[in-house]
Image (tube, rainbow, N blue to C red):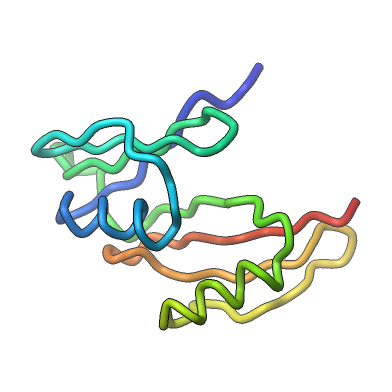
Length: 115
């Protein structure tokens, strides 16, 4: 089994596309009025969608992105003047991490796993 895609909810597709394309660096698959799709390097997709159902609430999702070198990724995000939600931390036996928020408050957590 492999992850095919994940979805976060947004109030503004244009802001979402700007963030995930230009800040996070994902490749845009396509953009529609209420939905956008992006590719990660490994082919997994991330979708952003304007809510159409009660349970689709922007700001309540978290995505984890493997950072490779967490220090380089942290410097890159700080250079883009992004406020950190969680500064660099470590979970024993798991990895190092930090997080930012997308324009809707969804958490984007970068992780460098211990190997």
